[in-house]
Structures are given as structure tokens and as C-alpha cells.
Length: 197
Image (cartoon, rainbow, N blue to C red; front, side, top):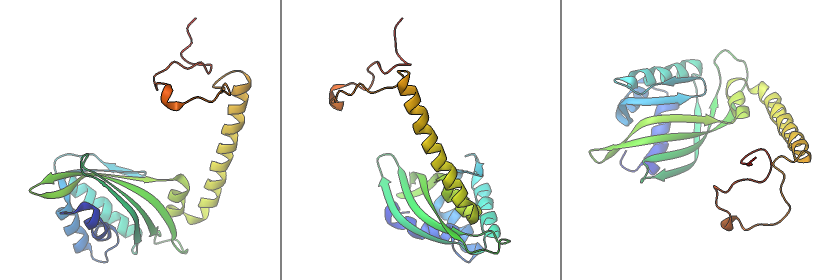
């Protein structure tokens, strides 16, 4: 890629949504390093000699599972200093054997890029999903149950935090403090940690 922030939209389409396996294979070979690494919630490929072939296999299996995929890129953030590109996207993926419509699933993709000969190549890809978005991706009808479970976990966290506060753990003093005046390494007097005997 010459301009990662601009080129990534086309690259993402060629890797995931093209109707041609030849275009997909050419994109993997053109945009990824031979030792590329890949991390996803359900699989990973460790970086190493010729790992690009294994990443291609993952992308090909992805298309076997869902013969038609749509993807939309919502946001791109390029940090040339770190060589990292963040992509927020929405994809519509449906397992071929399910008689349902695909549901949108939001994900964040973190790409580590390596510059060689004036061009940028993907040397690591990491895909991140919220649990409910991942549920919508695999089995859309399960997403409401996952959302409900997450809500229950949020309510439970609050109840347990209030209980811990009652017993003096991690309880705010109620005195407003300037966050700039407190070093981040300051010992905590909130209860539980950093107390001397």
C-alpha cells in the first residue's frame, strides 16, 4: 500500500468480500508479508516463514462458510510513527447452512504494517469483536441473549461494587481531587491494596 489510510478500503474488500478467489489470493500475496500473523476470536496463525499461506487458507475457509459477505468501513486511523492502522468496520456474514438473513457485526481490526521499498505491507492482523457482535456474526438469533447476559453482568458488577464499598474496599472519599495533582503511581487508600501494616 502506498497510502494505508486510503488504500485499506479496497484492500479489505479484496480480502473479504470479492466474488473471485483469484482476486482474494492475489490480495493476500500483494498486501501481506510472507511471515504475516493473524489473530481472530476463533482462530489464529502464528507469524513465521510462509505463514501467509495459512492466512490465505483462513480467508478461503471464511468464504466457504459464507459465500456472500458484505463489508463497510466506518473509520480508519493511521499511526505512521507506530506503523499501526486501526479499521472500524461492519460486516454481514451468514453461515451458508443457516436459513436466515445476515446480521451486521461491528469489529475493530488492528493492522501492524511493515514498510519495504516505499510500500506498506500487513505483518500482523488482529480482529476484535464485542461478544454480542460476534454472536450476531455467527448465530444472529443468539445476540439478544448475549446482550441480556452482558446487561446482567453489568448490574451484578454494580451490586458487588456497592457491597465492597460498604466494607471499605475501593470506596471514594467524596473529596474532589485534581487528577493532575495525583501521580498515577500514588499508593491507594481506598482499601484492599497498597496498605502498610
